[in-house]
Structures are given as structure tokens and as C-alpha cells.
Length: 116
Image (cartoon, rainbow, N blue to C red; front, side, top):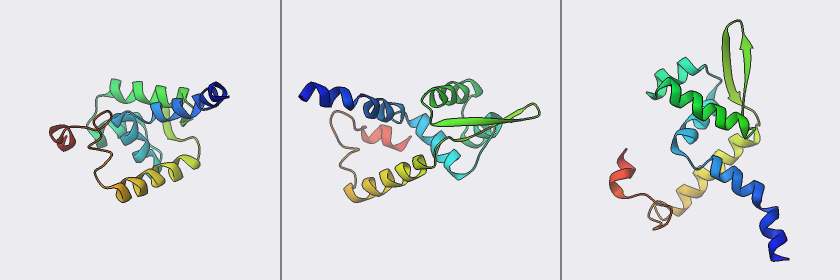
């Protein structure tokens, strides 16, 4: 029975792994506000075009981001409205727990990394 539970949680674990990268999180937060082109995201976030494109491709493969084509431009947006709710819930949870998660010895970050 425990094995079935672990297998059943596989998709949830994959979802949270896809959200576990700071670059992907900042892209999702930005896209939660409004759709954007890769050129917009690179300029606003100060990231390389290749970095933005790589992470958007990952998020598309996970079904979290989609795009629409207008002429020669592609506009990226969140694929599911539930993702906004998930991001908001995460913000509320982090606000409630303070810095406990950030200080986690396994998944947290050092004070020097938190400044970046």
C-alpha cells in the first residue's frame, strides 16, 4: 500500500520539481501578471535569451506555460489559472512560516545565497 501511495504522488513530485528552480519561479511569477514575449522577459528579468527559452521550454513540457503566435511573435502565458492560486498559496505559506524553510539544512539556502 505504501508503494502505491508513492507512485500516486509521482506527478505531484514532478510538479514541485518543475517549480523548484528559482529561474522558473521568477518566470512563472512574471507570467502570472501578464503574458510576455521572450524578449520582454529577458529585458525585464536581466536573463540571457537562451536561459529564458530553456526554462520556458521546460515549463511548456510540464504543461504549466503555453504560447500563442501573433505574426512572427510568440506570447507566453500561464497554461492553467490554478497555477496563480498555487503561487499565491506558496507565498502565504512562506509568510506564515517565516524563514524556517529558507534555513532548512537540506533544501534551504545560505544567507549569502539569499541576497542574490
